[in-house]
Length: 545
Image (cartoon, rainbow, N blue to C red; front, side, top):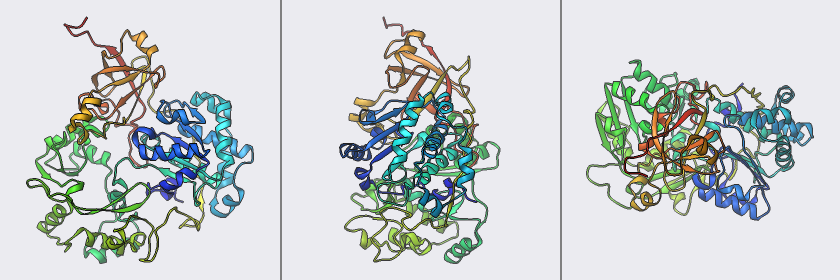
């Protein structure tokens, strides 16, 4: 039977951004929403002003904390133990939604047995959160039927990320907080069209619309539409492609709008793999660190230089309209791909983005009712199965498409990598408000660089005293994967023994240090958020006093 992470696997919010001010309880886990998703954070502040209680689960302090009813400062890598602990308290105190459970789920009794070990006392030992705070937060979430969970990469970018997502889904099912307005399981997408890319099939095991390649009926449908025999074998994940290149099993890569030389765990490993390829093609709007290694660079058009659609984190399909001509030889992504396909022997026949979108609708019922003409006055949320359908504000109103869904037991194990005498600190990574992702765009903006152009590492003042470093001084940060130098920023946002490094800065690339060996067994995602490191002062510059 499919896991909850598979069932809720589109990665889209089950509910809508506009519903947030109506939430009674907001559980934010693994998300610095104020800096990574500031518009959504503002909606959460509106909910707070409407009386909502906000529960934050994060090892690091951030901007929404002053609005929080409870901040649970979890030990890195122990999120699923805490979520299981919440569930334990909710079941123990009879706060579960029994009617929802009987109508919509299976395996509840067996799953409930798996919670026995997650008493508040046991979870306190694992997570370092006082048991009283665990019980209080669980009661608040469990008692509400207008509670929503919001999470991002602090949940998924672990070697146990799939288990973490299953634990999130278990909690929503337990309380019936899915399938209704002002509830939901709401992963917040990190970039503007990640959702649209996944919808279009940019995942290794599915065709467009999350239709699996190993299902015969699905494959038959796409073979008829595309006039070609299609493989039933899932492709490689990004992590597997890089490993395959080093083993000479992958000889060529085509990278679009991605910068793995900064974004992958253990980036020296990635550089070595890319150099080992027979052919590397990069299609991008800037000459990124990855593009500099390419054999061929195809200049692409940016969002303002093309027509099409973007689909955002709440499943809302929106029109993008061309405002400028692409510079030089730059071209729209779809034109590059259609022309390349034609040159290697397959003529798609597409003449516009609208035609491509309509083909997606013919092959995926969730988009079938959306037309460009309907998007002129605003976006529509899928599923939108007919041209008269208004779009779907929240998912699963009438139950789950696959019938009853199973609770999934989520055992706890300590993080696979942890501190020792050689690497006594834990490094976490993430974003800040002013820069974006790996800086390919924002670091070309002079005002942004003036304000937030210097790489830094957040370090607690207590650790600074022990290390003998002052605010603004350089330190060397090393892991089993590599080392770098960076200036420290002393702050209580991180606690003793933990540090935070933003991922935006190539000159102090956090992913020089992260480990690509410990992977999630289902998604092949590395554990970006728990990296043991050593910190040492750097000798003062000759002219410094």
